[in-house]
Image (tube, one colour):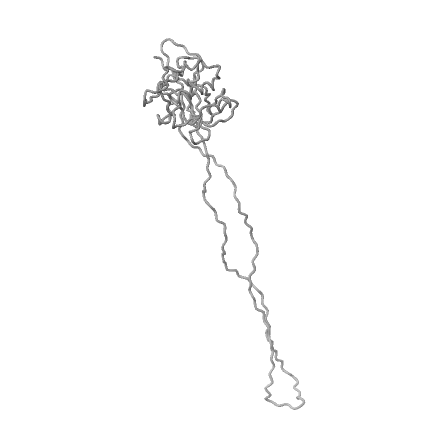
Length: 303
């Protein structure tokens, strides 16, 4: 893991630190090759679990080609003003990057990064003094390979296996893809409720009364004379008015039904199939070597 190097093109003989995102468009793969889970974009925490920002990038040295610093961005946007924290201080987990031994005072005293200036030997030396404490420093001479101020190369002490400050965490994560299900609401349709008029013919029977003129004639058996002056041919008429009933048809509205309109939620279960992958540990053994520990789902390769 810590032996993994990245290819960096040197512009001059002076050692430089380069942002990993600028030298590799696939820095996620570079982290994987280095044996650590890619922390870029994850939140960063100091001692006590206090959030200090997010990991925005990493710095790689062009002498050894190793990741040396994580760039911790505070404002979530502009990388300028970020703190550079040695990668060996990081505890990289799935939910974030933890700098367990970093105090608020140390974090506030670190140099703030600018992508327009070099993170110089002096800046690195001062930041390491802050992180280790002045009494714990082995001396600045141990960090320089020459005395020329323009050519001093920072000594990350790769040969010292007990010094973990600039070495990648010895933690190999096996990743597994899992299905993530999200639901969204969409307009599946609509129902319009209204009313219209339908007509039909109805018959109704109505009993109607009317008057009729009844004329009865009776023969007189014992004719008797008419008293008084009688003139034959008198045009006397009798008028009889008759009445009748007729139907007047009207209409009146009645409530025959009430309709309530609402909605209800119905749950249906759908089954979706997708392909997921998982990383399986490969154990390469050379010669007569025995391994101890649980190596489930491993693929042993004997060479």
